[in-house]
Amino acid sequence: MSKRTKFIELKKIFKTLLGENGCLWDRKQTHLSLLPYLREECEEFIQAVNTKRYDNMKEELGDILLQVMFHSQLASKEGKFDIEDVIDYLIKKLKRRHPHVFGKLKVNSPEEIVENWQRIKEKEKNKR
Image 1 (cartoon, rainbow, N blue to C red):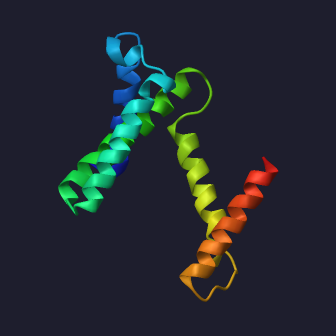
Image 2 (cartoon, helix red, strand yellow):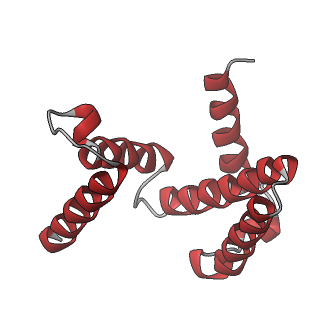
């Protein structure tokens, strides 16, 4: 199974879980009710990184992805956004914030990259 096919299957699974004949527990969840699970999964990933347990890191990243997919499907059902919108936003953000890679900006150090990232981030916040 290709990676693209796996992603499509994952999207279908969440659509089914939150659909009319899906999981009763999943269907009653909200963005707010899921926050403790997102926090827990992030904390477990941090612990796996700190202990250098790569199998645990892989598992916890999967659990974080579960949360991202869950929230995206909830938002999709509400007509707000879907996982493709999340991915599209991330792609645009990464390109904007890496002008030294995707543009013509010249940098001389990792510290300069971080400073530039923060400058771009602040400019984006001010536009909102």
